Length: 345
Image (cartoon, rainbow, N blue to C red; front, top):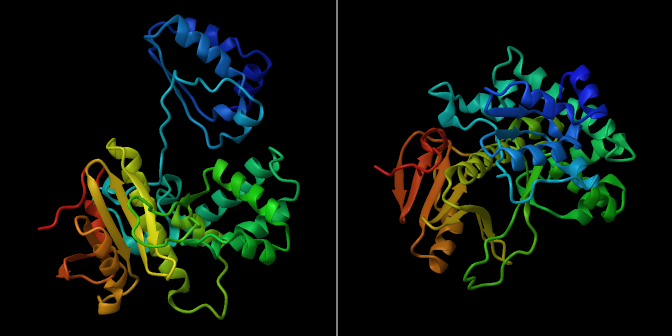
């Protein structure tokens, strides 16, 4: 659907897809990219699936908002939904560089570019122009751009919509609408609080992350008063978050991702919970492991003593302290593979 001629022809006559499939009987797999640009094709795909189950259709897209808004056939029960994420470090076969990933993210189009910084900014701007403005998803694109900047200060933090509304000088209802657009465009996501068998009062609000560290950096302005770790800390936590999210999506073991925080403020950055067990992961943007860095995991162990506990940091040594496995963050990310949790040796 990126070819304007093809898009125009199929939009005017969606049933032409049936003719194309019939004219290529030897092709068993049909791939349609950016399906949201021509929602009417879903009715034709539905009919083709019912007619010939040997055909496999792969429909990709970057937004489900337009499909839901137009109330089209979403093939309920006849298609599996899969999410594609930025690269995992393990996919790069030894070419993963932590510093580069923290600066530019892990989007394939960015990773392969000779100018990754320019590419990630162009990618970010493209969403504003083509997805938000062209589709009329918000009334004020400039206001939405300011909202994105405000959200960059909430990256890897607990979401407070009232504060964001005050910062952007818009209503909370508008903020909720903008956030829904952000999620529908797959640019951001919310991380819920882990609650099973809770033994103490827990936080209420989810945390927010941009889907890729590079997109966070593209929206986060650099200010003179920024502390040294004010950008690097959330960037590192976000990079681990996108890896764990991809691991849960690709692993096939029905694991889910959460964070844990008590009302008193004691926190563990990530909890991976599923049939294969429970892993608590803390991320620290420092080269050493201090006793206070283990405070959250120590409290977590009191409530969930049977779970694995991991601390990822910027140092180079593998350590074990108070039952917590402390790993260099680059080692952990390179060893994290779908269906396989990093071993402890």
